[in-house]
Length: 153
Image 1: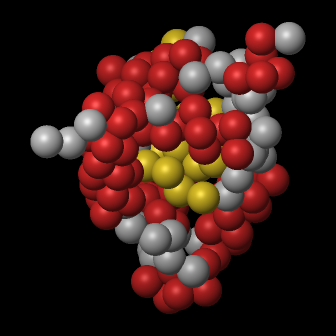
Image 2 (image 1 turned 180 degrees about the vertical axis):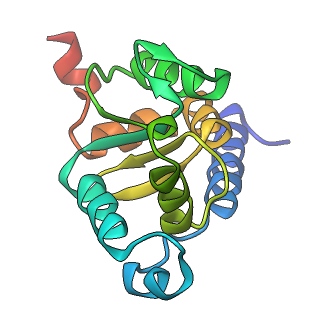
């Protein structure tokens, strides 16, 4: 019989492994240029936006007025994790941006969340990471939310 601690650790590891397996590695920008119908300049611009901001959410609508339930859910989860500001890109404003981010990430759905330049996933994965506590850990690791010690001071 596993102890509670061992059972919790095993569950956390399974959740993290499932989330990691569900998201593909972001394809290198140069390889995407030859495969994408989107302009290389736009792909470079998207890549720069992702690298220049701590958290980027490519979503339908804006945080104050999401235009899809999954986008609304991602915004709520990020807020519940303690993040008050992030870069949001409304993909409904441009078909090319919408296709470009899908090409860049090799991920077919929206919203898409990036933390410190790394593709995290969409609503389902962010939800799993939030539920397991892994989203908080990720944000703390990158100093995007206070650690528990700092938060209690």
